[in-house]
Length: 285
Ligand code: HEC
Ligand code: HEC
Ligand code: HEC
Ligand code: HEC
Ligand code: HEC
Ligand code: HEC
Image 1 (tube, rainbow, N blue to C red):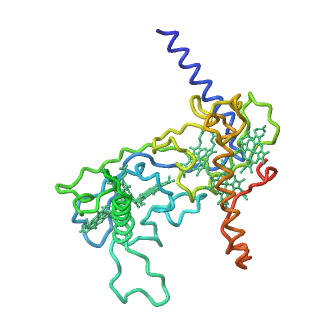
Image 2: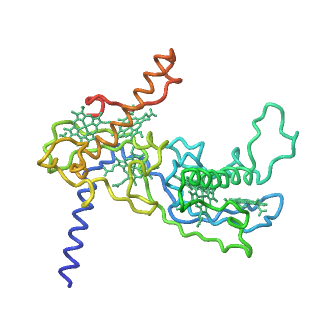
Image 3: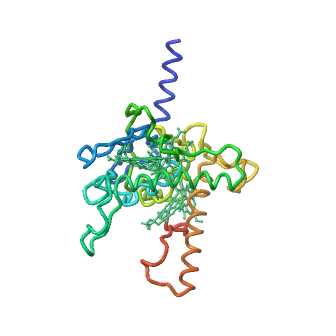
């Protein structure tokens, strides 16, 4: 029994080492501290009016199928994420009375207004879209007041774990077992946070732990299948090179085509063109 436990430990340690080998934190990229799990959203303590309704229990992790920026719309993917009620943002629980905002000043939505718009509208839109798509079992969040503000009031839940997410540039190296023909790839992780994390981390559902791409049982094959080198063939889905090239390249290619269409239409200013990633071999390698 003991030696079995030790063997498991060794295997785990080995997997951790392999994982670490692949992703070298280049200039020690900054880390984002991501709260996974469930938190409770409270009205700010200094609100002009005492909150009447229950605080809102919010399962953060169940929302990670969306881009972080759907909610954290001012986040640049590099700096820390600000809370919604930060000074200068939705700092007032309630809207200022009409006509009280000084002329020329941007009218910022109240905190309650912002939450209701972002949270409730998406839940409603999801329900509509799923019904329109003919889904028999729909999944969405609460739309009715009591769904978010139950009576009696909910006990605040703060079942949060912090996961550190590398923000800077990751160096993706070929695994040791492979004689690499090309230099390692410098991958700007944070430049990709306009997309949902699950677009790449497709087996992650908001837990506080995330496996690397080449974890055992995932894309852990160092060679293509003997039957074909074609990376589009499903037999090569566990071949690590297929996983990377099939994820990174199609998106970049599509974006480059979009850029070309813009350029054809006469739009040439860099700021007006959609951002796109590299497609040429030497741009990544
Ligand atoms: C459906 C909306 C939604 C999505 C999607 C979402 N968040 Fe959040 N997040 C929130 C809310 C609401 C809070 C609480 C903010 C507050 O307290 O003001 C929060 C809090 C946070 C905090 C803590 C901020 C603080 O005040 O310290 C971080 C960090 C964070 N989110 C990062 C992320 C990241 C990274 C993603 C993408 C994986 C993400 N969030 C996706 C709504 C969302
Ligand atoms: C972009 C769309 C979107 C936004 C924005 C959003 N939600 Fe959701 N929410 C969902 C979906 C979809 C589900 C169902 C997820 C599931 O079943 O795993 C959900 C689930 C929930 C649930 C769990 C319901 C249950 O049955 O347990 C709660 C509570 C919730 N959302 C609250 C919020 C709050 C509060 C906000 C705003 C801070 C918010 N949501 C913002 C899409 C959204
Ligand atoms: C999807 C979730 C959601 C739904 C549905 C929702 N709210 Fe809210 N509401 C919030 C969040 C989040 C806040 C801000 C945090 C807080 O105050 O607890 C809030 C704040 C409030 C506040 C200010 C705080 C207080 O308790 O006085 C009121 C009032 C309120 N909501 C009323 C309503 C009413 C009325 C409805 C139905 C028409 C409703 N809400 C539906 C999420 C929701
Ligand atoms: C969008 C970035 C990107 C582009 C463009 C790209 N690759 Fe890769 N490639 C990767 C990543 C990521 C890996 C996995 C890490 C590694 O092995 O270096 C990889 C791995 C490889 C490997 C296996 C490792 C090695 O060095 O032997 C080869 C061979 C390779 N790529 C060849 C190419 C060729 C040829 C092209 C052009 C047709 C190309 N790549 C274009 C990202 C890219
Ligand atoms: C465009 C693809 C892509 C997107 C989008 C993306 N990542 Fe990553 N992420 C990667 C790659 C590639 C690695 C390196 C993992 C490897 O090689 O095993 C990585 C590494 C990580 C790691 C370190 C894992 C480890 O093995 O130590 C964490 C944590 C992580 N990402 C979280 C996130 C979160 C959270 C989001 C959403 C805000 C996100 N990622 C969005 C591609 C992506
Ligand atoms: C869903 C689309 C998408 C996927 C998938 C994706 N990228 Fe990108 N990539 C982009 C976009 C958009 C940019 C431009 C970002 C910017 O300029 O802000 C970009 C930029 C880049 C850049 C250039 C950054 C610079 O400084 O010019 C590199 C390198 C890169 N991606 C590598 C990768 C690698 C490696 C993968 C796979 C692990 C990957 N990308 C997956 C969309 C994607």
